[in-house]
Amino acid sequence: MSAQATVQDGIGQLVLHHPPLNILTRGVLAAVRDELARLADDSALRVLLLRAEGKHFSAGADVGEHMPPQYTELIPEFMETIARLRDFPIPLVAAVQGRCLGGGFELVQGADLVVAGEGASFGQPEIMLGVIAPAAAALLPMLCPTGRAAEIVFTGDAITAEDARAAGLVTRVVADERVHEAALDLCGRIARHSGAALRIAKQVLRAGEAAARSAAFGTAERLYLDELMQTEDAIEGLTAFLEKRQPTWADR
Image 1: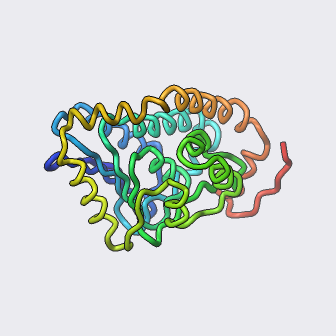
Image 2 (image 1 turned 120 degrees about the vertical axis):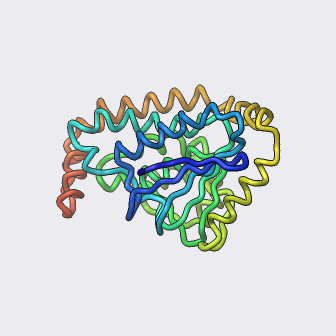
């Protein structure tokens, strides 16, 4: 399977497995949503770990699925996936190794806590293709200083794990070979506690953000579908990527 969850001793693990780069196709995203729905009502579950098999967490979404007409289905499905991660009723920990780019970084922004390897890199390179990272553009100003959020979205440049930690986007940085171990240790410290108390704590922690995020996600989705994808540059940037050439911007 492209994403599968297991539960043991109150700790769930939702694992991306779509080698070699864990590209987030619509099928992978659907599998993530299905597993989240299955786990949400498990009263024995106290914490969920989101991780990925292989060298890299994820190189992002499938660019081909951003092309017309697929994008009209992909973008709402993608935004729904991030919303379900952000709204998951118990603590969610992400373990990140290697590249965590584009949609992969947006998945991680759905987590409460992030453990990253020292060699991990994070970025939203969508702007280089003439499009944007809709969930990140909405979420990042809530998760880190607005100037840092703007730099990540506007430049498309990747940042290191330490830079992400300094910005408040990563909770802790460990040696690359210890990412899974350290994340499980953190999950174990959380899983010691009452599942009922953890669920209430999660609701309170998210209470101030919920309405603002819902509005921001709605705006991001509308602007992406109704305005961005009607520009010449969006189609040119995506096409150039698929054709492995440099885009020529018309600025319209």
